Amino acid sequence: MTDLELLIDLFIDGDRQGPGSEAQTRRAIDLAGLSHARGLRIADLGCGTGAAALVLARALDADVVAVDRLGAFLKRVAARAEQEGLGHRITIRQGSIDALPFGPNSIDVLWSEGAIYNIGFEAGVAQWRQYLRPGGMLAVSDLTWLTDERPEELDAYWRSQYPEVATASTKISILERHGYSPVGYFALPEDCWLASYYRPMQQRFDGFLQRHGNSDAARALVAAETAEIERYERHGQFFSYGFYVARKSA
Ligand code: SAH
Image 1 (spheres, rainbow, N blue to C red):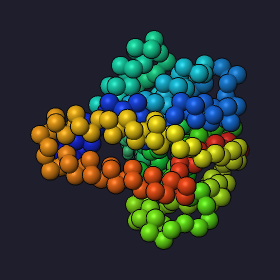
Image 2 (cartoon, rainbow, N blue to C red; image 1 turned 90 degrees about the vertical axis):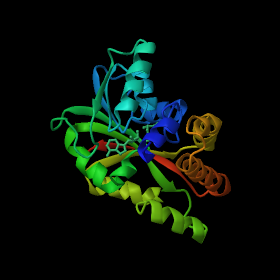
Image 3 (tube, rainbow, N blue to C red; image 1 turned 90 degrees about the horizontal axis):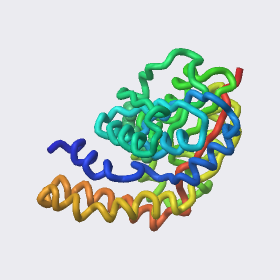
Image 4 (tube, rainbow, N blue to C red; image 1 turned 180 degrees about the horizontal axis):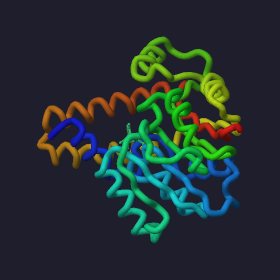
């Protein structure tokens, strides 16, 4: 089994593949002022197994296109949508978030939770802007420093993993520089990391290791995730995902 197949196997049964929660997705929906809009066309970029896409389809009068590079995750999105009677509202599209299949000015809302880091925050917001209609909304979550200072070791670690980790003010100025008017920002609270993401993952560890006969690769993946969880438990007051909502300026 390849490392990617292992990763898929560990993550596919999760409600979500990154920090977040239904409550915080709804908070961003409120911030974006979408609740009374009709007939929205929304794209969920890097949708995973559909955590955000399902909330958006449930909460709004919208058609949601859910995009991910992994077909196995997209099958889950489709199955979950069917199960909830939302099959007609959610379309799956396999592909890369840096080569999207949308026309210019064709999307009302671009949504992306915990995925833009794969192409980089600045490159992502710059590239995605063309697909939004003027006045359309971007809602994106990304790794963010919560304080101006932090332990040196933590700073070095995250900068090595994700050079674009920054404070909210830096990310907001990137949005301004690339033709967006910021509407709001909030940081995901602790339950988005622990209760919604890490605790359920930890409960899957034993079954996962058993399924893979305790292979070196499976144990290495569990060890890496465990180290990440411990890092959050130790230093979670210094970083989170920031949720940024911004309007495409004319
Ligand atoms: N938004 C989901 C998943 C976050 S995990 C949630 O919040 O639960 C990041 C997702 O981005 C994964 O599903 C991964 O397959 C996808 N991804 C990573 N790089 C990608 C790329 N270049 N194009 C499309 N999807 C990508």
